[in-house]
View (cartoon, helix red, strand yellow):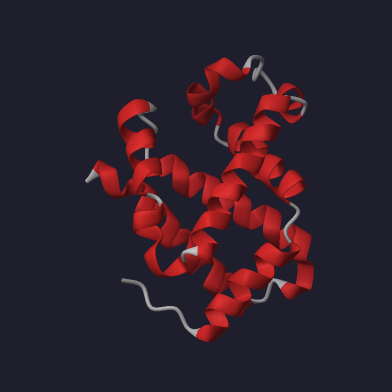
Amino acid sequence: MVVWTDQERAYIQDIFSKLNYEDAGPKALQRTLIVYPWTQRYFTSFGNLYNAEAIMSNSKVAAHGVVVLHGLDRAMKNMDDIKKTYAELSVLHSEKLHVDPDNFRLLADCLTIVIAATMGTSFTAEVQAAWQKFLAVVVSALCRQYH
């Protein structure tokens, strides 16, 4: 079980309170698909992902980015048991979708970049440390079924 300090909880809740899901979610997923093109293989039903322009204008990519952030919101609301919260998602991504678990880390890194760019100087080292810890727990929970 992960132990969260009151300050870490406050930092995570503050990030989510300021987060525009319809902006950050699509940007994070778009960045992932552009920077790491091999991740596109999981989104073949999304249509044209042949170049950055196509990815940036793809409404299915944008919509799934929002879904991803709402999933992270569930983790934030259940920080004391993220593994249980993500048990079904872990099974879905490992057994049905066959997603390479390394892709969760890539998406987490891209989301961190988007959030840092959005928050600017208020994304201090202390805030980033709490955010990275949160994402590491989320990624671990998503990868749980793979073990």
